Image 1 (tube, rainbow, N blue to C red):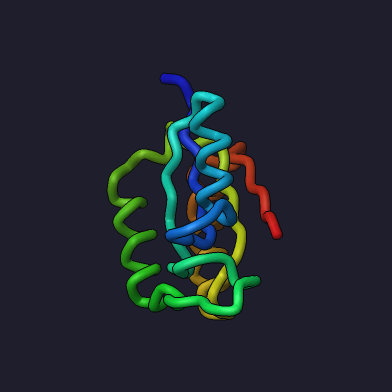
Image 2: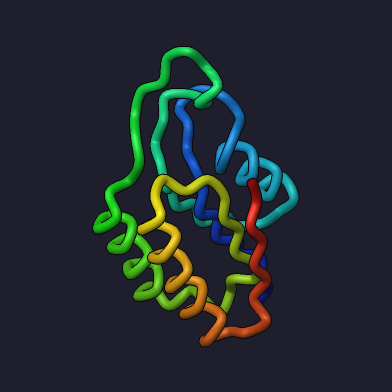
Length: 114
């Protein structure tokens, strides 16, 4: 089995190319299967004068991550990429998720983007 799955935990916007919109596109173009988990859902980039949306509630984020672990797909995951996070609590939840992945499969690469 080829290890070509990448988990992206990052912001998601409806309009524009930032966060997981950009990262997932680039990786998919390169042949990677992308598993995208949003930390926030915004109408557009925060640099605009008007922005709608907000952070994903921590209990929902935690439930999504637990659901992914239950799918038993980690053997095909080669990389985890994180980006914009909506709260300090999200950082802690995501850090636990990454520790779980690294415990199961230490060779998994981890990249944090800004």
